[in-house]
Image (cartoon, rainbow over all chains, first blue to last red; front, top):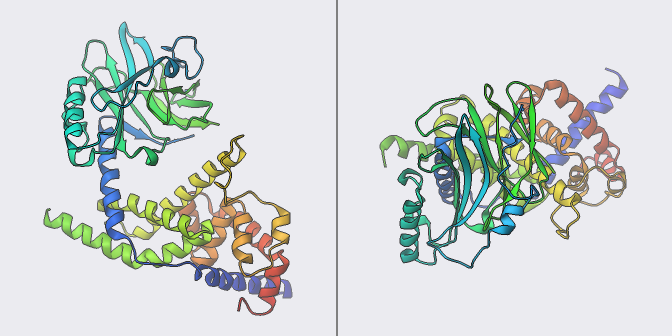
Length: 252
Length: 179
């Protein structure tokens, strides 16, 4: 072994020792098992909520229909600006239409509903009833016991005359809200399987664009739009007929 | 609660209790900060718990957990970098910063290694920590980082080279490590 190699190995060994020494500086504490399991159960409940759709990784993802077309003026945040947030009201959602279009002669639109946090169980009950009236399926309603103090966000598809179809949702404390979720579903009626063409997701308000790539190799850039009452912006994209979603990437 | 579910929960509790110290140390080296390390480990284990039915039955649950932790760490680093670069007043959000030679040259105190680690680009830091602290093989590191073995070799070599170039660190190595 050459002297250089010996020195090289020695240095790496020493760095390993230094790393171990540095790692010992951290205070280990007691593993917060119960807190982690509780948080995991909440996360599991949220994941189940997008079960009607397919959760997708929003990191990076093609001829393409630009779906964010329902907004007047075409500029970002236009729609959000026109939908006033009229104070706190647990039993009336803040509603924002973030996209609309026509598919094979059938009109569709994506609507965001944001529900203010109920202050007590009575308000939680009224909110759950209002959610049912709004059209949210009982299977994706938040748990009553976890509703007080929590803000709920629903992104839903209206396709033709069919009832509202939740695509993705989140219920949690507003301060914990993290943008960066996305889901993809067939752009079709409730009981119709098909290519995963409709992509809906949330991004941080600093995001400028989202590039959606389709399985035929094409891609589309869509603009995020504000939704009343939501700390995140929403984007919507539709794959052209005959292809489906592949990947997505946020452009900051 | 079903017996099977109960058994899975107990299995997870045992896994988490046993791995917590090591995960905390790894996260500390990755983040350089106590609370960030706790946050990273908790978020990682939350995801492991959600997928525990599958993860616990896998041959190597630790490999899954390492992969999740690296993904989360990389994601948070990207976010903080964007926040750092964005023209906003969110100062203080970024502890992990891109490579800056001056900072490395100034690393000469007891926390020289952590300072130097924090100054490494994320992927180099991850490769160094997994390879030389976790003592994983290059293949295991590649699995955890979701990249090729060649990328691991390259990142680890660059990271080590930068650490070796730090005067304060070189002194510690010369004198047999930190006292």
